Image (cartoon, rainbow, N blue to C red; front, side, top):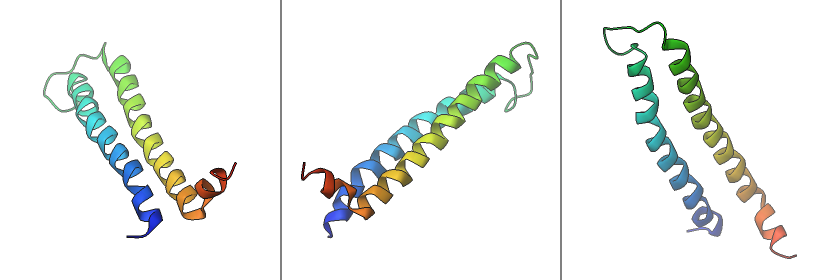
Length: 84
């Protein structure tokens, strides 16, 4: 196993854990807003959709951070920083 491959395991595992944590919360908020069930409470929809959008933003942000971290590992930036 290459040295960079071992360094990629932790970011991928943490990203998967955060996404697995956020998806049920995201689905719960959407179901409370009435999108997954039959009843709709129109007064709560803007509030709950705000939480759903924030949850989606967290998922998108963690995936973007994962790709940035993997690019840093591939570029050898971590090895350069360890020299100082």
